[in-house]
Image (tube, rainbow, N blue to C red; front, top):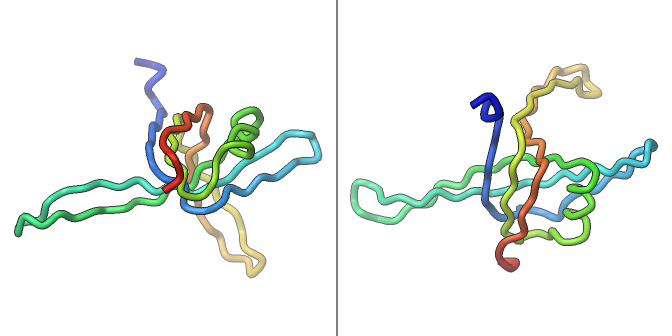
Length: 112
């Protein structure tokens, strides 16, 4: 069970074109938003959809796969870990961000 301490698995659709950054060290980093949908019926029996958005970050080979094959609307599965960090804006405000750092990606369906 020690390998399950911080593990995230998501299947969803890419919300916008991934952003690829080439760092000075030669490494690549990819950032994208992923929408996951949960369908249920409300008390009146009407179908409802609840959409959650996740920020995904990938490094190295995973970022290269995203650069080549992933586009807006594409259905993908990712596995990674949840991370939190903070940063300061130009105005000096402290902001907090929670992201999923992906270490594996599976390309699923066609673009929607």
